[in-house]
Image (cartoon, rainbow, N blue to C red; front, side, top):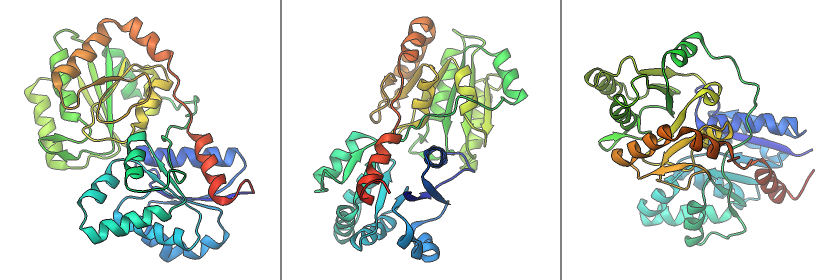
Length: 341
């Protein structure tokens, strides 16, 4: 039996990477693999407290950020450890292009040692190939794993919102993170969208799902925006609650992020047949309706069109079934561990 370790974020709080690891753990166990999750621990601490367990594991799958952590993974790989590393976004590009030359060279050397690097979109893979990474070591495999269709019941408050608002849109993010004059997940942009739509769709509702609030000052600014635009009755904050149960009940899901790697929530929405509109900041799952990143006019145009032509747009979303990443990840495990055990 293959023995697998998953190291990275794990709920709570609920975030895209954490949900992926949680779902991967369940799928592995259902398939008969031996799996241990080391939640919410850095590579450095894992090596310090669990390093000797390398001797009895067939795969060490890290979901790690930070150039120094990735450097450590390269050293582990150089010593023969069966390391898999998933890169969930563009941070690797920033690190390699902005670090001082010596650190950038060390990071590049480290990546060349890792036997399996999984990138969530093809653009990151192409960038790594340009950096001299062996194409046999790096694969573009997104993070969508088939969710359970046995969904938990919605809280009463959410049911009430659905009864009193139509159409209902939702946007989600890990936490509020200021980004230049906006925020990373496009919450402010979503509020501006709601403001533009409210006259055309007077019963419109917007749900904002966050794992945690994050930046308190920016949250206060967003609350003031709600009051200024008279949106208090149209917008509801949902903190620390799973997005999954409400997805099938939404009219449209939006993902207006300013940076992204893939957008797991997009694939989940499409899986449930929900029309999804997202920024064109990276390659998105097939079936996503794209708008120009940060462009409120284009965002409004795409959402307004979708709502005004909803039966057609809904049929197109239902015809899109995202690919399951599990077979590709398992194939990578088998390759670096020497095959099924």
